[in-house]
Image (cartoon, rainbow, N blue to C red):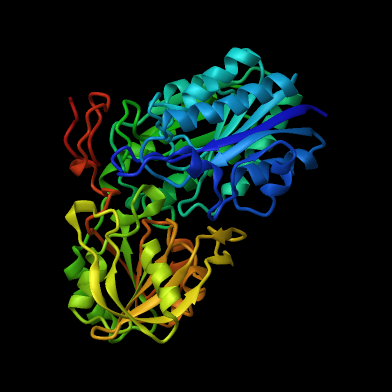
Length: 507
């Protein structure tokens, strides 16, 4: 049995987003737990589809003593404030010093954190931990699929283990795999070789989905390299590929991969094979994007003969990538073209949601909704909104992505503009529209509506693709810019392409 310290610090930073991640955002709960520290962490993460939950459970099953540090996560946004970063570090610093010594450390990290005081949030965290525990202690961290996996992260961690699905339905499973790898490394006590590669082009998030090609085949290969090499006893113990998070204006933004094993030649060969495979698929990372009016008109036409909903992915207002979740481009287009029966969610407008609750079900409120932040100069959509149903925002997620999540997102309401027949789901806190329960909470059965607008890029596919006739990708103004060519980068490394087959960035 080993004493293994366990903690986490999660944030996906869109440096172009308008809202920063403050300490308060890490402290509060939303779909995931609030800030947890010490023994309360063990119970606090149980049942959630998050890496630390899977790791804690598996480490205990393997007979190790789990020593909980601190864990916190905040919704994707712009830079983590220096105040938030240093407050979280102070907890780690105190607990590592007070609760040690340890035999190893497991960390639940994202891999795309950018703070005001460091552009490599995870690399800096690992560096500070190494100054306390030294270079020999095994440190294994799990990473999000969208990590910008930096050379510093790769060199400072003993091993990094990334998700293999997007939508992320394997988060807890990834924590479990990281725990099993850490257990193996502790038991075998053999030298571990590392091969790290970066790719030379940015991949838009919307085309990173593992439900579709080319990412599907690439991640099939990730699993095959790991499992196949093990079965042939060639010394590979772990393979991770992270397609990257493009809305991060940092030098190390972009896709990367890392392979670990006991046989240096096998490790290098596997890394080369995977890198060459991703590179060969560069041209395939593309797809059709529709403006809001074109999307609304096509959805109306398709819905006439469809047996299931036409799903519109409002990808640029995805709060899961730093979007404000209150833009109204798609809502206005659906209303303009009288897309009767269409429902769009979640539009985060706390005041409108509260007013709807106060107005009461069945009654009319005349006001604007959405465009609270006013991204791209947008204005709220003013109409006579009938309040159809209200909710308190407390419910349990049931889909593959948010399954087990205990939502606490404040007052909610379903409101309908009777002139167009279009409805909107109002919410009080930013949360990605990736679970059908968000709609059921206010009386909407998603499978029964003709047109469904979702503020999400890819995660919605886990719960909504099975009920969709087809999915259209909409490029409406929003803070999560889909095309990296439109992002005003200043700090990328020279030589990386701004998108697949795109121009090279040279500053």
